[in-house]
Image (cartoon, rainbow, N blue to C red; front, side, top):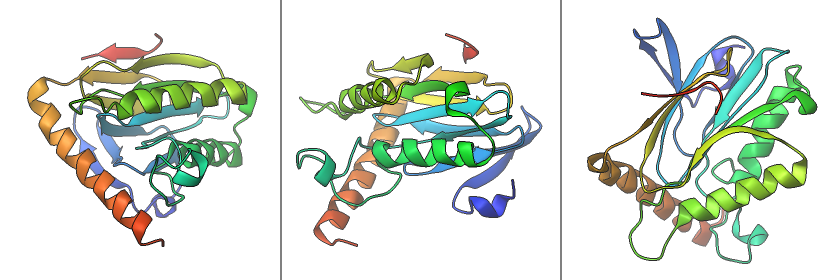
Length: 203
């Protein structure tokens, strides 16, 4: 897999793993046919870590909302892209299948969906309910997950082995993640008005 396939995804060298790490932001996804470490930070968002262990292909997505407005009773913002779970899951899975993966062999792990907003808004729970319904409807089995609660999460996914390093972040970090997600939500809203436990280690 050449890096030109995912030019929007930044990479940085991490001496702890002695390799480059692909760093995902909301709306990103990444797939590799070679062993790779993929990293993201989650608040109310969800990251799906998916691989075919036989084909040796795996990747991660990071989505912000379940579906665009036209697919979700008018409650979400418009714009069809991988910022939405409905597209992010299909894109990630299809790219794995294009590289030799098979649907019946896919190993799926889910993380995120924290309640980091005050009041009655719980975008994380909305995301959690949607993605679990999606897996059930598509006939996928969930191997491992860490969803919900009131904390942000840092996730490192090793596409070659399926190992996950997961860190629940302290409350001091919540404000940073909240600001990032709120800014992203505002951008989505603006675009809508201007149309266009296995191998999971806590550390």
